[in-house]
Amino acid sequence: MLHTDTLIIGSGLAGLALALKLADRQKVTLVTKQSLLDGASRWAQGGIAAVTSEKDTPEAHFHDTLLAGAGLCDETVTRHVVQHGKQAIEWLIARGVPFTRDIGSDTGYHLTREGGHSQRRIMHAADATGDAVQKTLISLISTHPNVTILEHYLAVDLITGKKISLDDSRCYGAYALDSKTGKVITISAGNTILATGGSGKVYLYTTNPDTATGDGIAMAWRAGCRVANMEFIQFHPTCLYHPHAKSFLISEAVRGEGGILKLPDGTRFMPRHDERAELAPRDIVARAIDYEMKKHGLDCVYLDISHQSVEFIEAHFPNIYARCLSLGINISREPIPVVPAAHYTCGGVMTDLHARTDVDHLYAVGETAYTGLHGANRLASNSLLECLVFADAAVEDILSHKSCATENLPSWDESRVTDADEQIVIAHNWAELRHFMWNYVGIVRTNKRLQRAQHRIRLLQDEISEFYANFHVNPDLLELRNLVVNADLIVRSALLRRESRGLHYSKDYPDMLPDAAPTILSP
Image (tube, rainbow, N blue to C red; front, side, top):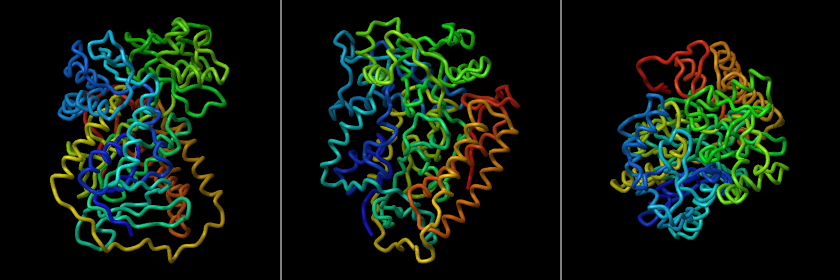
């Protein structure tokens, strides 16, 4: 058994920021199921939305967020986050994050603009902001004496009072599988933080890394936490369409810097769908692309930035330029083939302004959490900002009270299970789940499609539960078990929303209701 003051599950920006902010005051254990770099935060190309320029205001950022959120943003939370944006950026700069400079700017840094923003306010490190931030923080955390890092460990489940026959609902830590040895260890923690990211891998096509299997959301649900707004899955409009490109994102900033969406014959189509054209929020752009592809029977559409100079493209989008060039696409001369793909989970585990969940001593931060900031559609580059602001909130709450890890927790019991005789069952179920979620619970939905998906989910749940009860756990089984929980929550939430709002568009209910309310599910 391992004892720690705070257990952090996940090594994206939320997890790393939390670990660094807590480590000077207590012992921290950071669990990540692959390496420290293998989370979604690393792949954030665009940047971090924050008001740092005198030409911008928190009020403008606040209103842009509300507009994108289609009436479902929590205004108190939204105002709190945007007002703490500059502080979050300053913390990263102080840690050494190499944001792109601009000596002509009043901030000293280059600010880009993305869809839905009324001002240039996106702090970035070229077109690889997430990678720059993650590597900077990892260099600091990997040598900190108070931080224990467990790479290639996958959280199996949370340990709550109810699960160990105690008369309380608090969280005491978690069980974690060592992927290399197959052994499950017990981690006792005074506080546990879920920072595991979203559930993009529930869909066949996604910009997310393989780690995005909704683990934190599923574990919190099983532990008794409410979840909210799981129907709002953001599909990024522009994922590179190429047989040899796995989930490569073409940043929102390409459109922010003048990229034009076109049909194969060169016709521009976004002005027909929204007066903001390519700078409309993601949900509108994704639906427009989906509409044009279905109308014309297309495999993809095209994003054209070739009117900009090679020097401009190489300076602003060096990684996108190099990646496309390696695939035979010179974006300074030809358009980029793109399709929408599942990108961000706007819903998640319900938390308060201190990042606390319904279970005592259990927190959720980042894409795993539903804070109320994103509403029915996340405004571009607000996600990393949310990670930083709520990491601060969780740290403040954790340090405000004394909490010790429990010495005696039961070990993982595998006395009644055996080795699985056929792993093909897991692979088959995984593929089936992702296919029908893409076909039935995608960008445009109907009740009939949702009901079909729900029927298949119930069959899969029975098979997966039986497999879990009888065989030793392994990473593929644990991720599949979590994915099917997320799929169920998404479909149940979508069936409850009898309107079209933000990222949720239903052909059965195409209009938006006058009153906006979150979709809240209780275990």
